[in-house]
Length: 154
Image (cartoon, rainbow, N blue to C red; front, side, top):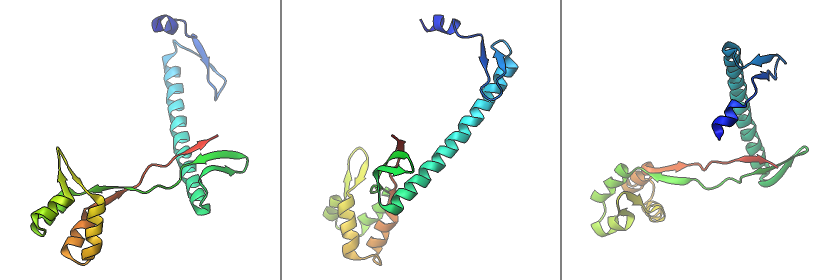
């Protein structure tokens, strides 16, 4: 079915930038049009990303998220969210030599892959202090990953 539809495609197209009619058989012109389209799409993509960052920054400065209006344009802007934490497990393994085995087992759970217990590690780090060896290891192991944010026009 798709093959039949492809065969019925127009044999020419009008270049939206120049108004020139380009025949499907003129592959040099088709390739040039395609390259220019790709360039424009990349430029629009870069501009769109820049606009989204500017709008997110503006919403953050105003502390307004969700449905936001700038000028006559109604947008939906994601609020800032807490970042997720990725743990450097090699760094956390250094705790094994410094903590009793049962305490280490409470903090680091071994499954098919290791998963750090964020709340317990952060509590321990606060309790022992940032200057202690344990606190420094935990601080070096914690890696915050910002959540992606989006802007959608309504």
